[in-house]
Image (tube, rainbow, N blue to C red; front, side, top):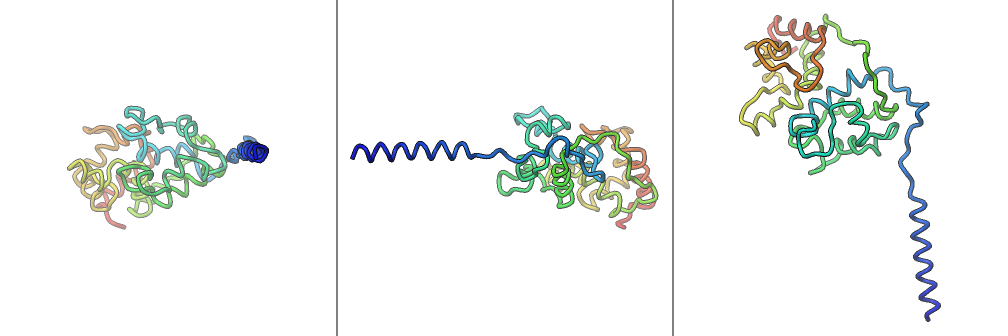
Length: 226
């Protein structure tokens, strides 16, 4: 009987060792293959999404209690990005999860387009693209084609309907009516240029001259929902 017991214990220990040894680390794209997606630039396309939605004051900007600081390339990839493997990247899966684990917390979830950009960026190697060529076109200044996508990435993470409701005020830049209100009263361009208002986007790079021209043209044309 004792032999049987000892044999069983030995088998369990051996099985545990085998299972531990077989635990695989997540796949990481080799450095030599991290060429990136030429249509996606971290500085231009990815970082503004993190600044607006994650690195807000008191959240992941280093001023709050969170261990995650998501305000720069190094900080973002250090704490939850596995190059080549979005599904193993904790930051990405927290944005596509559900319930209390869904990020950003207490704000609208990222759009399908934003999640798609982040996923493709990780999949192609999570490269730190900087000084990227601009895709901005000053002849395009419609709300749907230029203004809304711009504000979704740069502004709506902080200035949205949910945050305005919880604080009892603030600008709403995730809806046409909200953007139109501050466009026509002068506060929109004032904030984007720092003329009499706090410079926006707060904590991030200012809009480019081309982007400001798009906004100014849209406002001058009557801030149409076009």
